[in-house]
Length: 259
Length: 354
Image 1: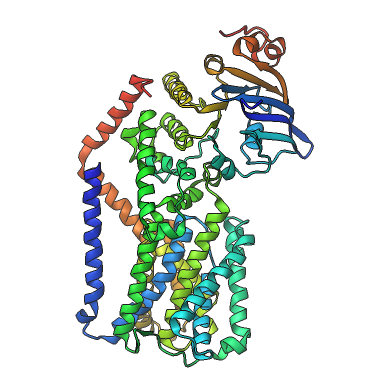
Image 2 (image 1 turned 90 degrees about the horizontal axis):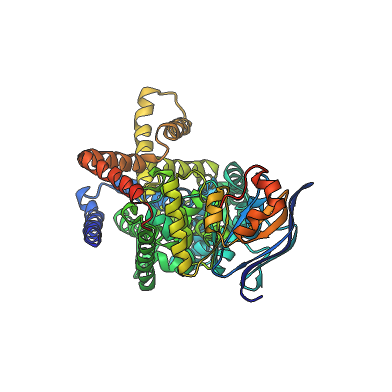
């Protein structure tokens, strides 16, 4: 069990009478890329919000690196090494690309308000390191030449990459991506996938929600399928493509296995 | 890149040098004109308050409509401890700042659960409560009659009685306050504050403890206001609750809005514009409207606030910054823009070189 980076056990979340997520269990192994798929309203985003600490679960357990983390705030989870991106981009529009990514480096720095205000030597050193790390991360995703641009002025596809760089710069062990491909053209999607695969090589594990089946089938090591808040299947892309319940619920009868 | 930064650093040092020279040389320039000096002292006092508020509002995006209360905490703490308890002024000032920070902490915990209008209303309520306290707690504050006979502050055994001495003291605080604020802004803490302003949910998911930073910056802004209040008390030697009510809080807000939040300088610019406009009004209005009462100032600044919010929401510093950017892009001609578009194209054609 210790190989599991993230374990979700019997997780439920209801809003009033609506059961958005019902007793869902699955695990994410270190180094894997795991996809969560399902029709609209299947509870994918709710599941993500519960795992990342934005909304507390109604019932069940989330374990991250062996620790039970239900009830922890998102910033506490980020400190433990879990960050995320958002379906509708949540960039800091008034800041530059570099500054956005430097915010992502927050967990690796220590300067508080006093040492920052007096600009003590270790703050100066930390700032330099944050800048270098952010630059290195931007170079990795191919955005170094846009570092000084205001993020709000950049094209959508670039903004997606910035958000991923921002989530990855602190070298978290797990990144949750909520529909990372939404709104990207095929070239941009391919670029994004290449970035992921490179980050995986560096030991980052990914859990993502996605509609674009082509990406899911080509990138994911494992797939979890939700429908009406319940897990209806889990397995490798091949297994999922052949799973009768999945085909019925999600892929549709006439659309055979895409790969 | 590094060279650019060094040039930038050099230019900054030059700006700083010019500022310090202006600070030192100004009293000689005005040749002991006490009216100008006292105006500058007041600008300095207000600039301290509004610099703290610029951090809170401009950077962290949190509003406070009760900032004059902290200004009052500093003023009354200094007044009471020095005049009645015989404490040294510096110690009293420090105690006032700590007390203001404590009050901000206690008030901040429930208040920062709220956002936007609700936060504004809650801080307004806090301001009203504190004003009532200053008014009614006569044993300490002297109530509506005011507090008289605050002793002067002394530096190295020399008590500061003249405007010129006080000018140096106040502006030393202003420069230190600006320096401290500027350092915060360009640090991990400043980035966290701006991130909170931009998107709380994103800031939080990247490891920023939102509540902690909001509270810290609220406490810091309270300390700025409190120190300013202490200085004011020692300068004027007489205070009354009206100086620390809701209307002054609104004026501090107006200073921040006028000055804008493009940099930590916004508060200083706003305070200077506010004081100068106020003085100008006092001179001009009686000539134009001999019957006008003291209310015209509120009406005028209220209108100004509305106009600023509609036409210049990022304030004077913001407008200047935007203008400079536009100037730079036109001056840099089209080559800059085409280079950028080319870069974009190159990236999408190149595809996955990530």
